[in-house]
Amino acid sequence: MTVLRNSSKILLIILISFLGMQCNTGINNSTGLIPDADNGGISLPQGFSALVVADDLGRGRHIDVNDNGDIYMALRRLNNGKGVVALCDTSGDGRADIIKYFGDHAGTGMEIHNGYLYFGGDTMVLRYKLEPGMLAPEQEPELVVSGFPDQNQHRDKPFAIDNAGYIYVNVGAPSNACMEQTRTIGSPGMYPCPQLERQAGIWRFRVDKLNQTQQENGYRYASGIRNSIALTWNHLNDNLYVVMHGRDQLHQFYPDLYTERESAELPAEELLLVKDGSVFSWPYYYYDQIKKKMVLAPEYGGDGEKTEGPVEVEDPIMGFAGTEVVKSPSRAEHRPMGIAMGGDGSIYVCDSQKGKIWRIFYEGE
Image (cartoon, rainbow, N blue to C red; front, side):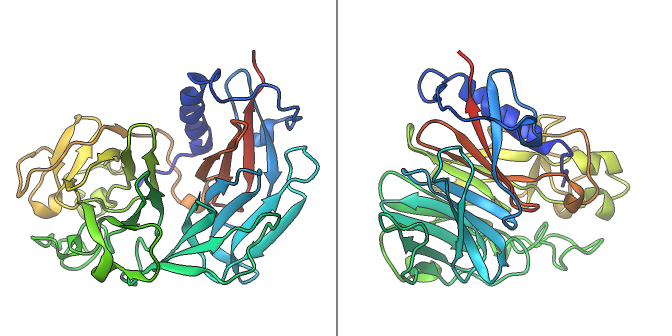
């Protein structure tokens, strides 16, 4: 899929454009923080500044900030044998001066809820008890959910927690397009796609119950979602929002139907409003943001134009597309991954390349 060379700038512009509409209801313009001279290497709208909280922490994934300002970030790969990093600023300058690592598993999901730090590994969801006055938990984590399939592709377990005591876990598809022979030229798609049974969707569990398993305790909340790293529960309108990572390799597998440029831009990364029982497009369709319609996937007889196929699906809210293409994600300067809001309205953004954390704050009037 397309990886934007300026993805950090685009993400921050989208984020801050939203926040700019709420500057009088959350952003503190008297933080007293001194920003970095270059805002930590990122471009920001007028009135906003940034500083680097810490750098070279490891491949950062999701992030959250406790009420006391302590920061927690999940790591995609273990750093010194640990999968979570905790940061504390004792001087008040916004920069971390205490950094501790803990946890034996790498992963993606990270959220603080009711005194616990919830963490999504590749095959399970754990929680750590956060004790007052202690930065890193000393107790062993508790197992919330396990029993997810162990797979080579899309293993990440990001999640969201609602207002009613449920946790919603992404279970990604273990393939690109549910082909009979995965990522193989000419291989047709399986119908019905068996991966939709336990994967390629969102599963719901109790957030406060321990030792659950996917098959015994899980409820399939939504399906047809290839994989999602970005998902959140909107606590104001009680809805789950998910961004789906669309399929890859359209030109590689179907050069007669798609140019290299079309393959780089298609399909859209779909922003989804997810309701109980929602069925979305993967693997049978994808959203074409240029044509602004659902298109039948070539593995199921599509030619880049057809819209009719084996099932009806829900439309995404909108599609996103970029213009500058990086041939390898590892060549991107930064890859913004996690976002969290602090108690003073500061926004924390972490990077999955080396683990930089920016703190963005408003200094305008």
